[in-house]
Image (cartoon, rainbow, N blue to C red; front, side, top):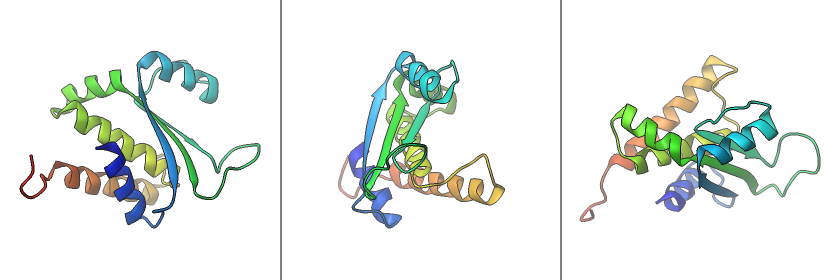
Length: 134
């Protein structure tokens, strides 16, 4: 499920050859990573670690980075938003991938609107059932 959705997003946005890793873990590990790399001692729902930002050597052009998703947060948020956990994990992955592709929701209103539109686009696609499938 996640692999297919990630491939579709990358293909749609012109990065079909790009690579990334996705880790679904718990609040404890996400909190540890958030503290270590962002200086924030709290868990969050999703973290993105770009290979093309920051100090040090940059990875190959087609290596985007890592998306880390908190399963615990996904469970809580799925209950809050009234949809399944799988749908929430997919939503968080989409959010993380868009960050790796350079979209942001904190800096500029235009960028934020474009990111939200893309998130909704992939959420709608995810909710549709395949023809003849379950």
